Length: 305
Length: 225
Image 1 (cartoon, rainbow over the protein chains, first blue to last red):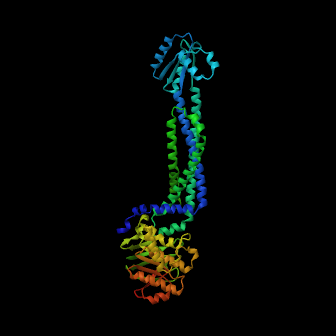
Image 2 (cartoon, rainbow over the protein chains, first blue to last red):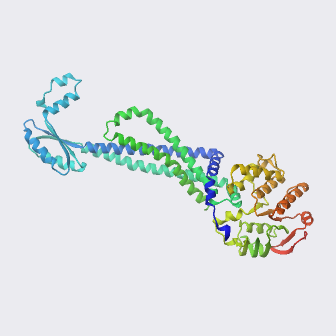
Image 3 (tube, one colour):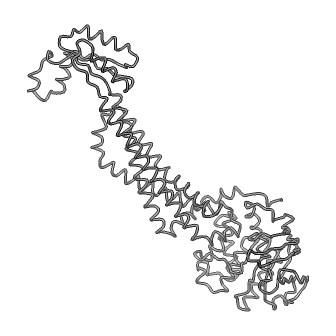
């Protein structure tokens, strides 16, 4: 078949910039279509970013709470210290227990004094005798706390057992609801974005039906015809990602002092910041990728490739 | 260079456009295809650049059977043809320059080379100074010359001109024919479908007559019959 059989992949490569320029021209020459598409995508991407951020934050808050989850066992004042230490030793040996710390009456007083140093009235009325000694038990698993607590309540000398399971469970349930509802909403929003780009590209293809036909008749390859539409989608996505990110960043910047005071004491604050930075970077890729993928579907559907 | 071997084409509406056509065109020839409207001239062209496919028979271009080409091979084939379409097929939202440059952009030429070639082609067809006009701002004859400029700008192996002088005045008609002759003398194969008997009779080139899809006349130095 000679020269007819060869396809020119290298031509597609060399026309990279031309395709980009043509894609930008398609966007410029259909301003209202571009505006409606970018507005819709920006809204969807903004909500997606907000919900993904909320899910990430809730994940780290829950993680922090779970790690904080511990049982505090308060002992009656009459309980001898060696009994408490012996219980500490026994508990430390248990598989589900990660760490057991002994807080003597004197230690408790020091903590109390530290916490209320600005309130002389409270300080005057307190001595180490009225503060109970305690064991702070950190469990490896949140689920093992309940059994451990009920076991400790039966021990001699134990006055009270306090644990955070209820708090963690409640937060965990809310975090799960947020995760499921948020990610479902994100999926719906991204689907809406995809359909918007798909329709926009469809309209562009219909508007340019004659142009596409002429291009093909003068020897344009499928990639020469389709690539500008992929760029069109990518540019929609990039602009939407950028605008939605700027909006979100402005909101975060304004509320940062309040957020910092709430979350900076979290055990995984640095890790949270890193994860949020990754979410931001992914957000910049998400828009263009979504645009390209939707355009690809649109081109495939409307150009009948 | 071009060979039709028992080619037939019937459209979906039942119109038999070509009926067992055998035709051989050598490289560098200048051929007039004449015949009444509906004789199959445009279909003959469309089958060459595969805008239409034949129902039976084979079409060869440079010894390759183009009827078996895959979709991905069509661009390569079509780049061998510069086509002046009967209805011009200009992009209404593109300037004269952009319309002419389209072929070269498809070929992937650099921008400065595109500019040089487009300007030369527009000068050749007498459209210098109209580069940035849009098709709707041009007369029928000017649009036809843009179509001609686009057909020849990529220096194709074959020019297929479907009624290239239909909308131009007599002076410009001869101008267009002179351009086609000049291109032909440079080695390009030129096939012109026309109703213009004066041109056909004056040039004494090969004349192929189609009538109801069949070749009824094929003369080396023919005249309008």
